[in-house]
Length: 165
Image 1 (cartoon, rainbow, N blue to C red):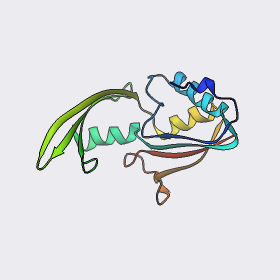
Image 2 (image 1 turned 135 degrees about the vertical axis):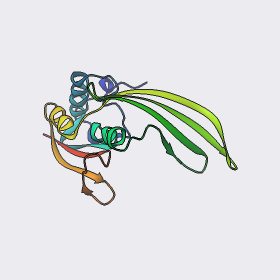
Image 3 (image 1 turned 60 degrees about the horizontal axis):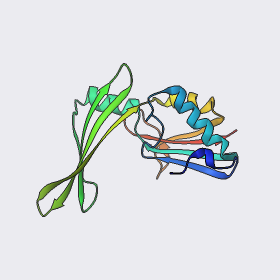
Image 4 (image 1 turned 90 degrees about the vertical axis):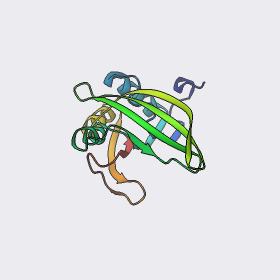
């Protein structure tokens, strides 16, 4: 496994965190701030940090509170279906979830595997605050990175662009 400490400083023009990677897994704002600082140290001045397709407090809160949705089914691709069974603590902003994967066989679903995750979730202003304390400046927040439509709290994951300062 490669550690971020093994990279020299100012080596990358941009950094990509995609699909809820790294940020939130350790359950601590301080730890996440230090991760963002480390990422900044390996990113050149005026380089970019992209946090894309990442779940957040507003999205999960809306799904659980307003919509009353307890489980999600996602037809991932031609071969697999995902059933997500989340549990969300609004006070601590902690999402615990079991992802159960099924392989498609004709019209049947065959159990394949499962994984459990636990994440600290952030609102947009919280992640911006952490990033700013770590040497980043917010450039844009999008609902969709494809068409660059503006971020919509509670309706999309994070698609955030930061610039190294």
